[in-house]
Image 1 (spheres, rainbow, N blue to C red):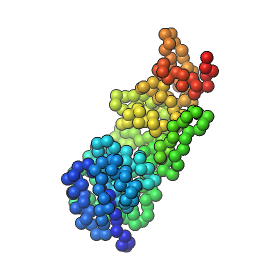
Image 2: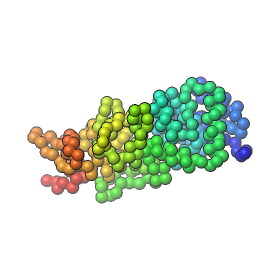
Image 3: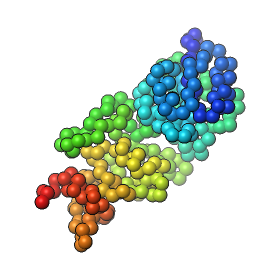
Image 4: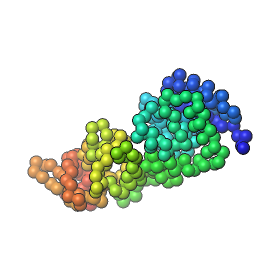
Length: 277
């Protein structure tokens, strides 16, 4: 058995929760508290600066959530992660796929020790690479892909890719289970209240993400926001429709018609290769 001391970072916005985790970690053999963070920004800095072996990461924090922390640091740079959460069963299933373990608040000492020992085994077995892939899958990104701009031909000023690359898969709830939808299957996205709805050729899926956040993670060479409530995959557009009164819409190859904001028509025409008059 390895005698390696596990360096632990504790991230939680609640002082009592941090104190409890600190006591539990210090009671473990060959474990030390490398640091504590009180919010998402503090966590990102601590992970990069302290390089802990293990992080107990609260999911529900004001500002940056635990998942936001993983996105900013990058799955490939995350230590072994145990999520601490009060989320419902759906979310727990997703986090279980992405982390070595999770602690459902409130948890007892025995449950903490199970999670800690599982994390220690993963560290000692050098299986962090497998966890990296799981974290990347949760975020819908490629763990090993470097940040890259979209092809120059798609836009003269493409947005830089997020640190993990553009979204490739999106986890969605489906009848009490988590289904992964490849971005290649998404034809368009619409706003659904505070959430977004993915539309494939088969059906729609509601996801717990705002349109703005989703737009920033989709490859701009392939997707364009044509209305405040609509994002469309460009290669699914069959025609641009000009109506009376200056109204515009697009017709997809599936026959679906989507409204286009007047302020976005010029960009859409340019991306479609329409000759400007």
